[in-house]
Every structure is written in structure tokens, then in C-alpha cells.
Length: 281
Image (cartoon, rainbow, N blue to C red; front, side, top):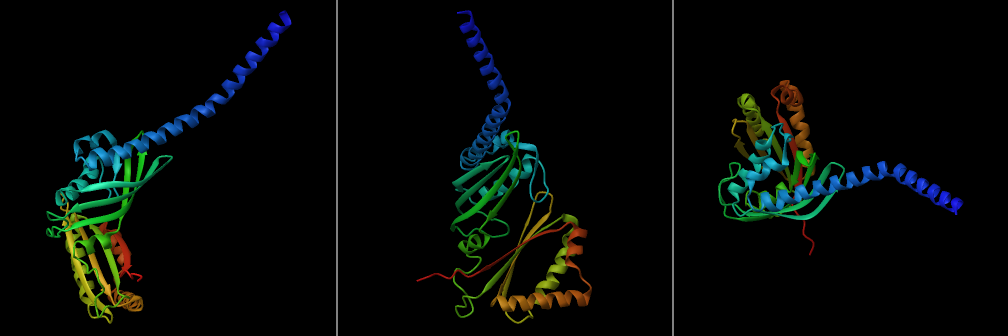
């Protein structure tokens, strides 16, 4: 009887040792899974309660003081500004989460934005047109609060739906037309010098073979920093390639280095290239 009791005691001790040896790793995994789940819930709250219900006062609960946007602005107000401007221009704005993926400290959302353009947006006067635009948003979180966000949307489709860009190819139904879309963020102190260079460049490209048209749009933030979007249309990819070579030759001739120019003036630039949608019948 005594030996049987000893055997039970030894087995119990071994079981406890095994449990204790496994628990730190298991505990970490459980904690990690819980953190990922909470991050996912935070982003769902952002879309369902803050974006769609327009409860912007709740942003302070999920946006970290460490938050920084792609333009370098910091804090809750940096996140809030763009979303408030968008919903002011599109009062009925709604976001649909089509898919959401959470991993480590990041959450990726495949989203669809819909809204009616009822007020001015980035220098585009109200069109009263309804848009539906897909996009991908990436959020980085720390302690279940957002510290960074980046959104990639179908800007070309957005401008087409507003009527800024043609929905059908121009120039005798040319399906090869290429659209070069540049977006610049320009600090207040650099605006004058930047606009002078931009005017020179736009005048120059209009003299090149294959040029079709170009448009420019501007928007100022509360600190009078400037965001400019330019859209240049070219007959085809070959003409665009020739134009790029011509522009580089002109820059060399006048001693202009765009990279150094942007760095000196703290200007950031994003470039996207599109062509007319070729529908299959």
C-alpha cells in the first residue's frame, strides 16, 4: 500500500514538472494569439464604429500618441485630419471590410469605400457623383493602439468615377493611352520653388511627341503644407518612354537633379502608372 502511494506521488510530481516546463512557451503563444485577436478587434472597431458611424471622438482610444502618418505628421490629429476631410466631402461615406488579416503587430484590411461627392475634395468641386473604390489598408499597432497606417487605393478609378479622367479612351479610341499620376507633399516653405519647377516641367512636356493632356490638383492642410496631384496622359508606352528620356536630357542641360531638389526641400513623391481598361467582349 505504501509503495503504491509512493508511485502515485512520483507520477503526480512528474506531471507537475512537465506542466510547469511547458507553460512558459504555451503562455507566450496564448498571449500572442490574444494580442493578435485584440489588434483585429481594434481595427474592426475603427471601421464599424468610428468610420461608418462617424464617432471620431473615439479615435483617441485607439490611436497612439506615437502615431505617425506617411507624411510624417504625428498624433491623433494626424490620423483624424484626412478621414474628417474625406467624410466632409463625402457625407454618406461608408467602408466595407471585405477581408481582414492579422499577423504579429500588423493588420491588413481589404476595403471598399463608397460615398457621394457633395462637397469640395482636394480642389475638386462637388460633382454629386457616387464612387465605389477598392483599397488595401495596412495598420501597425503597439499595445493594441495604432502607431502607423498606410492606405493604397485605386486612385485612377476614383478620378474616373468623379469625371476628372475619361472613362473611355481618348484620341480616336486609343486603348494604348498611358496615364502617369504623381502625388507630391510639399512643405509650406518649399511651395514657391516647387511650383516654379513644376510649371517649367509641365510646359516642357507639352512640346513632346505623344503628349495628350495633363491636369493638376492641389490641397492645403491646416499648416499650409501643399499636396499636389498631377495626371499626364500619353498616347502609348513608347511615347512615354521617349518623353522620359527627353525630360532627363533637358534636366541634364539645365543642371537640374530632381532627387537632390526633393531632398533639399523635404518634398516626398509617389508615382503610379495606369492605362485604359481594355474590356473583353
